[in-house]
Image 1 (spheres, one colour):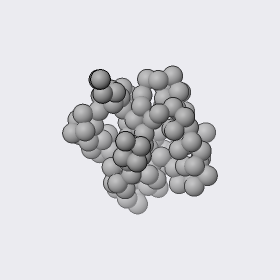
Image 2: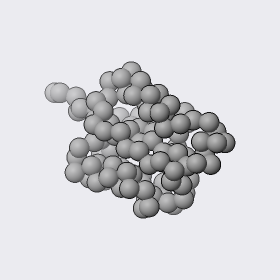
Image 3: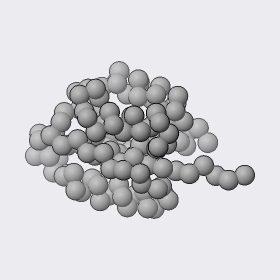
Amino acid sequence: MSEEKKIAGIYIRVSTEDQVREGFSLAEQKEKLLQLCKFKEYEVFRVYEDAGISAKNIKDRPAFQEMLADMKSGKINYIVAYKLDRVTRSVRDLEELIAQLEMHNTYLVCDKDDVNTSSANR
């Protein structure tokens, strides 16, 4: 039996306040996550980038919405982000996102927060 392909959508985001306060740029996030995907043997489908956008909600982030559409159409089955707060800072949005991930057999991996929803399901 063949193992399912691990196809990742890399999500990077920074608001102007984050970059000033925490000092990590989109380029740094992208480089670290590409290295992580190579290490974990994930095929990278696309890098989704929301620049200068707050994490207040998911619906107002164009690249994030494109990534969810690609997940729903089966193009990706892993979402890889630098930290969970790059994905969302809202518990409600996180809960809704996890429900969508489960519905579409997709896993969330956040490098710096040691979040990996695939380990609980396999």
